[in-house]
Image 1 (cartoon, rainbow, N blue to C red):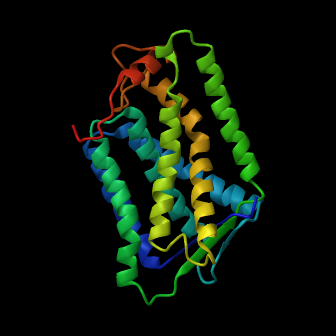
Image 2 (image 1 turned 120 degrees about the vertical axis):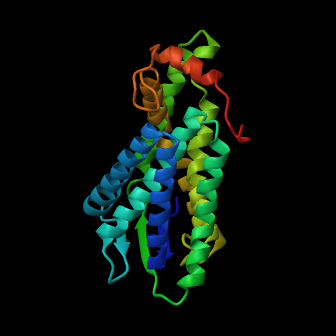
Image 3 (image 1 turned 90 degrees about the horizontal axis):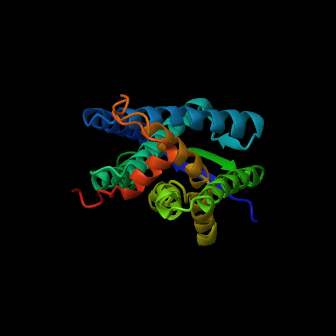
Length: 262
């Protein structure tokens, strides 16, 4: 496969605008008592930073940034931004939140609008350019993805009752679309596409990252979600009626998605 380069180019204003959005988004989640959702987002932001800075940069040396900017601080913002936003959104999808449409519109509209706002108010500022190559580790990520879905498939094959089977199309759709949402936002806003010579290079990054990068964690995140919500509530309290893993899968399969704001 052709070397895939994940590159972003943006003015420093973009970081400040996005940080303000993250604060507002967090406050709204707390207002709606989405305590576990916030906790998951914070934890995954830290995980993203450990992977991006610790593995991709320190271990594999695949990260680079334009002169005059701190790779550590820019990666810390990026990790907390997309780690927090991606996984709070994933948790809301898995929870089949009754306001999922509103949450989704909030996130997607920001990913679309933020680059456009930045271009208008910081068009003449020298941009930050940060990129990573992926050839040295995409194979490892593919192994994680395959093992995760293999485990889910084996689990389903062992279930005689269809109601106890994990809804694989559901978690696969979430894993692909969440990554696609912000990859597309970056591409349309000129942040991801900057520096690429052809449309093919732009689309290759969009497609491969959407299929692989967030999706590789979905089987594991789903199992964590089921195990946690079988015993505890979104407000971090013990459930009145605790369930087994299989019982919680059945319950979650019977829940409906609030895509229409109902």
